Structure formats: structure tokens, C-alpha cells
Image (cartoon, rainbow, N blue to C red; front, top):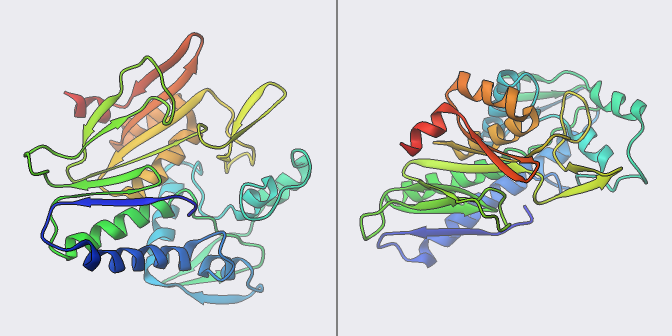
Length: 297
């Protein structure tokens, strides 16, 4: 996934006994869902001929089903089937052409065939391309966490590329406290929020890691599946807290695409705990959903 992972835990299990199981679960995610590995299940499906039918591994099906659910709930602000659009912009394994894509090319990428999921099988109509970059990392966190629970561990913190899931208490009786930076990786005068990850996960989406500037405008590498263009608003980041890191990951992406007005309204409607950080004249502003505000009380 182009990032690092770490696991902290309290228990009598040796790290040498835990590591193989952790790495096996990370390899499962990469082998099935990587958009960069040519032999992954995802890449092989995307390249498959029209009319082919593909039986999906259980983990792949779990992620796809969740992605489709959040796509429907968000009005298309999240889309697990936008690989042609990602490739067109050069945000995936395929290098982009010079300059921004032409409107006609974007329109063709948006006019993708429908996704037909039949039980545990997926039909490739031709040209359908899956992209799990907005959800697979969170699922990997969940998969590792569930492995630790199966090993009898009741206190741990799993982190992959800044997305975390925690459970239980540390030896001093405190939970796994995590600070939410206004814009991760930067130094601001604003005080960080601190949350206890006791049965909770946290994921953040924003333009702070990868972006480009054109005509004086900053564009992140998050695409709006509804328009085919990179998100271009003043939201710096969206952080979501949820028991499932997979869902926190996908919802953070969807809410970031929607922006503060639509995004906060949707978060309130679905009881999502979300923090929006927006760029405004003079600095950063923070807006939170009712569920997020309630967690701070």
C-alpha cells in the first residue's frame, strides 16, 4: 500500500508469534485488492474480457459490498468502481498524459457500465474497473485487529498509514489516546482534539498528502465520482470515528468529496462522528457533526 504499519498490544503473546499472522492478513489484502500489483484479483478483474464472470474471495466481497452501500448512502460521493477515471488522471498505476484530461475523455470514463453482483460473483461487462484505494487500507486495519482478538488479545492499537483501530486499556488503566491534528503532518496554532480509541477506529481523508496546483487552485488526488474532476473546495481534511475502520475510511472519503455543507448534513442524518477542517481566510476552521461533538462531552 506504499505505507507502514504498526501494532502495539498488551499481552503475553510473543511478537514473533503474532507477526506471521499479521503479515499474512496484509498480504491477503494486497493480493486481492491492490490497484498496483498486476496479479491482484482486482487488477485481473479490471483486465478481464467482456462477458466473463468472476467468483470473488470473501474478503474482496466484503469490501465491495461495503463500498457499494456507502456509494448508495452518499449519493455517489464514494465509488468503488472508478479505476478508469483514476487512471485517466494518473492517480493510479497508469501514468497520466500531459496536462489535464479532456472533457470528452472524462465523460467517457464516467459513462462506465453498471456493476452486476450476483451472490459471490461479479460480472465483467467490459470496461468496468474497480478501485479500492478509498477503503482497502481501513479494511486491512480491521483484518489485523480481528486477528489480534482471535489470538486472545484485548488491548491493542493497530495503525496502517495513519488509520487506526484501538481496543482495551493500557497497563496504567488509560485507553489508547490519539490526537487528531487539524491538518495531519503540519504544525498549526490550533489545539488538537484527543479521542480514546476504545472499540473505535479513526480515518482521515484530505488534500494534505497528495495534491497539485493549476491556475492558482489547489486540487487533491481525491476525485469526485459524480463530476470526474478532483475535489476543489476549501476542505483540508475530514476525520471519521467509527467502530469499523473500513467504514471510517470510506466515509471519510465520501464526506470529503461532499464538502462541509452536504457532508455535515449527511453525517448528522446517519449519526456519523465526523470532523471537518476547512481553509478560511486567516487560517483553519473546524466544524463537527453532532455525534463527534457528543464524544467530546
